[in-house]
Length: 106
Image (cartoon, rainbow, N blue to C red):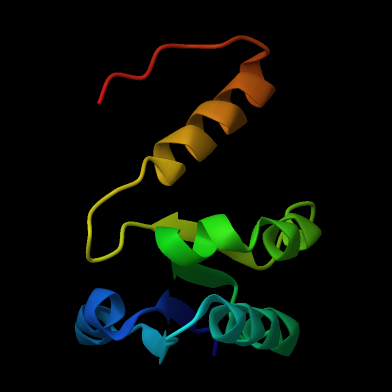
């Protein structure tokens, strides 16, 4: 059975256990990168959520998976709130899909 993983600092991700996500806490960026790489290579996790703080710091790793269908590595806000990473990603994908920039109101 496929699982959904969530990677981030303890305070940001523990709540995701309540909805059935497999939570992986990381105290540092290198630890988070190692965890995401391991989860991605296991092929058990088609979706991996990563808190924005770590997501923004591991763009090289994430880009290596961006052309693949699985896993989808998606940023989520951390305990300090949104940094706008998710909205920027949606904007970029929309622009790529329709060939034009569109205004996204928040």
